[in-house]
Amino acid sequence: MNIYGQTLEELENYFATKNQKKFKAAQVYDWLYKKRVNSFHDMTNIKKEIIISLSQDFSIQKPKILQKQSGKDVHKYLLELNDNSKVEAVLMLHDYGNSLCISTQVGCNMGCAFCESGRQKKKRNLEADEMVSQILLIEKDLGLRISHIVLMGIGEPFDNYDNVIKFIQIINSNKGIDIGSRHITVSTCGIVPKIKQFARESLQVNLAISLHAPNDKLRSRLMKINKVYPLKDVIDAVKYYIAQTNRRVTFEYIMLKNVNDGFEEAEELAKLLKGLNAYVNLIPYNETSHIDFQKTSESHIMRFYDILKKNHINVTVRRKFGSEVAAACGQLRSSYEEGK
Ligand code: SAH
Image (cartoon, rainbow, N blue to C red; front, side, top):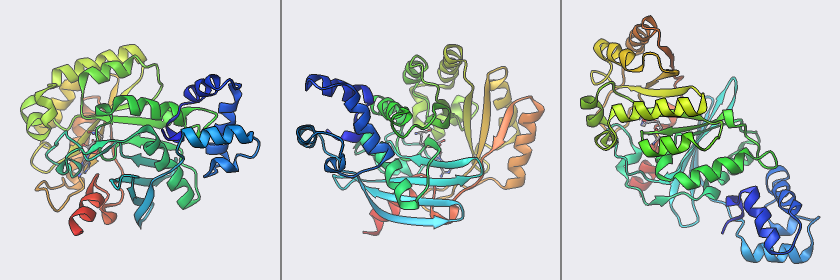
């Protein structure tokens, strides 16, 4: 087991089984996440015998930074995990804070037609510690603090549900990295039973749904998952989520030229989302060399935006980051693997 994958509660239970006081767990958290030591032996206020048992029971290893590309307000990392698997993380510097986009799986099985990550099938899930380490490594590398986390890197978070929940609990702990739940966003392609389960977790984190189309015919063409969980079921699950949590949901909508960006689609989308406590985030498509979709022009995106507005739908356009550093989800990893 890796120490960075332990929730505070699990670590408290660990100490209880060793006939030690619970508060030792908070002390270890303080060394790991406030003082940021890299070795159990640096935890100088903890007794020798406990250090020895910690080092026997846990590993404290982190992934390695393999490559880094930087552009204006964006740093993109290729990380190597302990079994040599590779994942990406992207840090974006916003005026409201530093936001890290992290990966949840090695590859992805969802197979969305426009997405680079899905070109490489899922090799395995990331463990909670491997998600936590992405934050620690990048904060150290850049000498800054990350204020926001988005689970929008490689992988489908709800296809790795338990580790993702654990990860959120670990980084949210005020004894640890202490990232506020309202600063954490989980994005899913629409795995309906998991959206409902997530609604019952009583976590105050944000939920984003990758919608990308306003009807089943088009959505099934773009996203295989829609054949398993069609739009009506996704919308019903979102309604359930809103009723349980009282939280607003984000719908992500990638703008693909002549595919889903017509004015009829804008009207249809407005009708679909009418009355929901939600907003739409229009995403300029990051073109990738392997996939044949093109991006919608900025002026056309604004016309699509205007139609949603006119229909009283809350809508924003995502600021574009990092096209100069191959920031489309999965691009850095594919180019690394294919260049070998
Ligand atoms: N599997 C999850 C999270 C990872 S993808 C999900 O589907 O939501 C994060 C977001 O990036 C999704 O909305 C996805 O559709 C979008 N995305 C994928 N490829 C993209 C590209 N080339 N340009 C812009 N957005 C992309």
